Length: 127
Image (cartoon, rainbow, N blue to C red; front, side):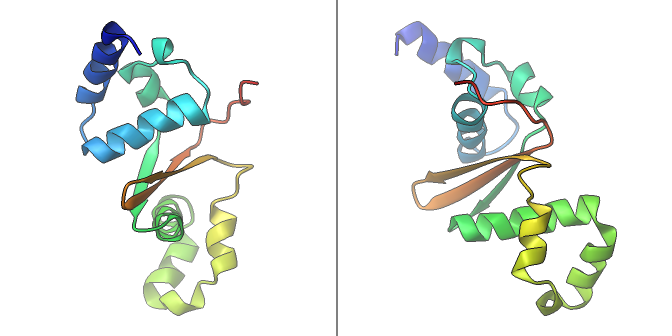
């Protein structure tokens, strides 16, 4: 990677209003998940994809956090059940919320953290 490209990437990363880990995970999703080249990545592009990042010690934990986050936003009945009796919500319920037909989902292992990026934007992968 050239110095100019690296500086451009750093400028984009500095525009994020989140942790460096979350910014990196979002960039990884845009480049490796959606298939955009680094030359096309901008803060505006990342913002337009409406990415939500969920972090955990493992992918399973990040998926659980994502399911809870999406549930509270998109499925109030299931969220109420979750609040009243967390044990009543089955793993299949969580996986149903993370349906890859509804979302773009990108998993990233980053050091001792795992991240799951969820976007309501569905793009066909670039081949």
